[in-house]
Image (cartoon, rainbow, N blue to C red; front, side, top):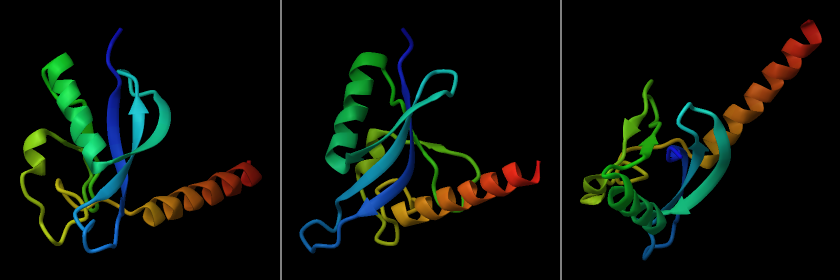
Length: 119
């Protein structure tokens, strides 16, 4: 069986001083042909653990992310966690927030409903 792939689509940051480098990512769990199976979340530590497990089992990371203002996803690997830019909400770049994602989903629903009424 082929492994699942993971596409990070949003980030939720923690606002406490001791947790300012911590965040939770929201991701799509996808099959090898791009079929989406689930929407899940992981904390930063869980994400790093998953990437390490990917390397042990498959010799590479199965994680990618869609960053803000990018048209293509980028690969995520262990070296991305070495340092964090203070202007980004994750170690590997600036992701849309959960509220950004919710706004997009709400907009898509409205468009889908409007399209259904027009046809």
